[in-house]
Length: 87
Image (cartoon, rainbow, N blue to C red; front, side):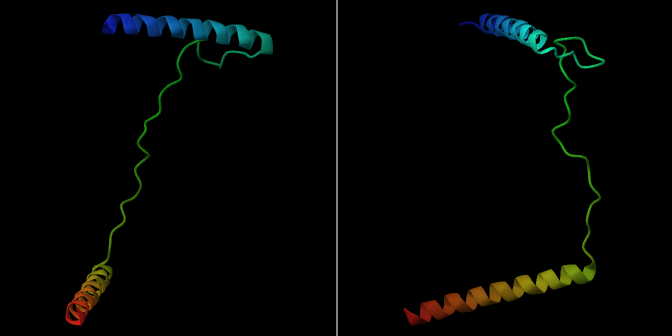
């Protein structure tokens, strides 16, 4: 199937579904949303969330994190050395 045939087929399906929705909405008594014509698409919202204020680390916080990482790696090296000796 060519791309144009696929697009045409999808358009036909959309038209059929819109017609079915209109008929069902009439039975329920639903009204079209205010400000839009029946069948018009709702505006698409951005998938990206609104920007939030950037959080920054103080020099003290950065120093504390660096020290914690050094301690962690030191413990890791000690454990590896201890394991190598025990083998």
